[in-house]
Image 1 (cartoon, rainbow, N blue to C red):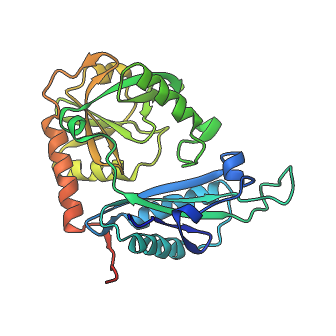
Image 2: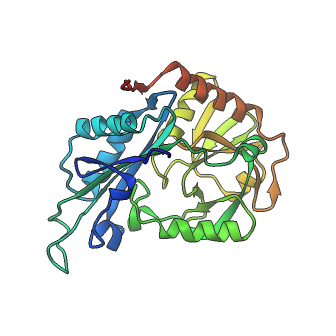
Length: 297
């Protein structure tokens, strides 16, 4: 019998079947919660402090209280990984506004629900698509503008993302990207995007999540001597690119072979995509920016 996964809920480590929250939790009722996802590879968590810092910023920006310090979150994440004995894992940590004593709640007064869920590492695409590249569709839906909901809020309310994903899958694509309110390329539901043209790498400068893997690839590109420009990108730039790739915690770089019916003319994955992805996994194998986990015998 397979051992049941262990979930952290409000200070307790519970088997998945017992890790329940109230149906009155505002994370469920209103999508009123923030989260982050960090990954472990070969027993080492990559950029744990950066992920917790981003999570902490989301907590502050949403006025969402938490009973845990940054160190408490870090310790609980590591312990959840140990209790599940996962070497390669995706770890999602969540804080909701919790259960209110009133039907119409004052969101300033909350007792949070705090959850950490670790699962075996999952890539954003299967092995076949990682080798040949994925097909992206530009959704008719637009990303939120900062005057509506700043994309830097990493919140659990994902209806917008789900509707766009359904649209792309029904149209036969693997995933999607959307544009911002001005028609500039923004991001995908779970990834940032890069464009390569004439050996220069471009990525959107604003209106996107502060992707930690995105920033890692910018750093790796600069180490390799490539020029990286953070700027506005249009759909035209995607259609005429030499290479297009996405980055995410779920797998590093993922090559794109087609965008809304326009095939990438160069070989896919491209040479720059391949090189940067190789450097990324070398970085992780060496333990750079990593927190090593001590597993119990």
